[in-house]
Image 1 (cartoon, rainbow, N blue to C red):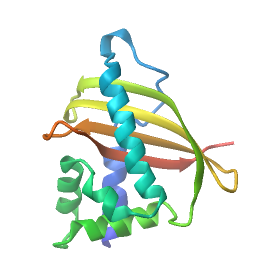
Image 2 (tube, rainbow, N blue to C red):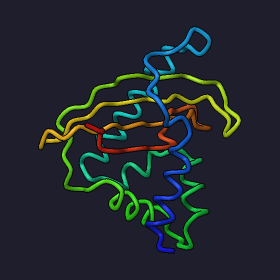
Image 3 (spheres, rainbow, N blue to C red):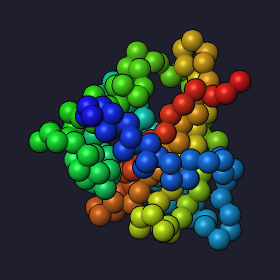
Image 4 (tube, one colour):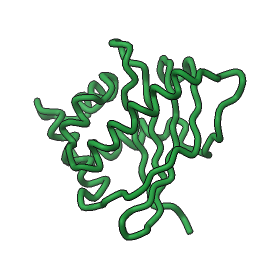
Length: 159
């Protein structure tokens, strides 16, 4: 299997965590506005790098957990190259997003899948050619106490 297929499979597996319905806001049980805001700001920086085609720049600020997962799925000694190849095959580098709006976020301390804390963030995005997309990012608080993207899910919105 090619590295890009491993990447897509890995991102799908990682991205499936919480990819169901959008969560509008948060519940009182899992409310941490400061964490949510910091995670959103980090995600927007990451998305700007992706939007500008700077996949290696996005790799540099991606969660250590995701980097470890990508490295484990590739036979290459350069997982960042597999990351770039996979992301290019997942999201067309020519795609230009003209607007992006946060439609929901949800903070959690932990899950059965991986330790937290983490924030799921949902975006409605519109491309230059007026096609609507849904983006879902899971940001994780990394060991350096910075919020970093752990999973990214991107798809054209159903009509």
